[in-house]
Image (cartoon, rainbow, N blue to C red; front, side, top):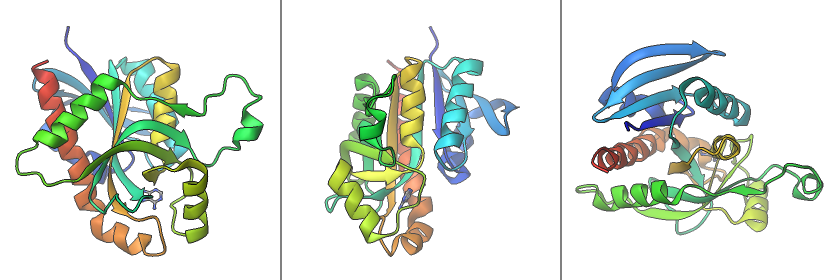
Length: 232
Ligand code: ADE
């Protein structure tokens, strides 16, 4: 059976390489977001640029699942580094995804509540293989926890609190809602993020400088992983 992979990026810089390499068959708009129905080698892809933040990401993921029924969902994009080993332009592959702006103590009594979401092992292994095999690639990579919230982290106090409470390798604004919606729909998922900044007082400048390279790194690894899936 042909595989259909849903690919979500928050901004066009994060999805443009995928759309350039794939053959776009059709573009369909739901709730203000475009879904590109594409072919890439043996695979069917649905590629979407969801917009920034948790609500946009959640809405896009649920619509993608309802309207296009992907077999798996992969989120690609940039992130703020939260660990001294994780350098700008390195890649982080999710082993766990959580929200850093949810009051766990209050939410624990609510049903259903999950503190974090675990990506699909097969997809995670495919992404690791892709980054390791990428010809001439010297991209550093890390496998670990990603934390999401509705802010672009630029302040030391906020960064320190997130590290103290969650110990993530990086932060972003969409991974966890994408993982959350994929999880409740029982769709396998994985997140790939490349570091554009260190989520500190230099973050805005660093982001402007490294956003394109980091977004490219992440998308390039994703494409290489898709190449591997074509022969699986
Ligand atoms: N994505 C890229 N950099 C980020 C940061 N510093 N905070 C949140 N999301 C990000």
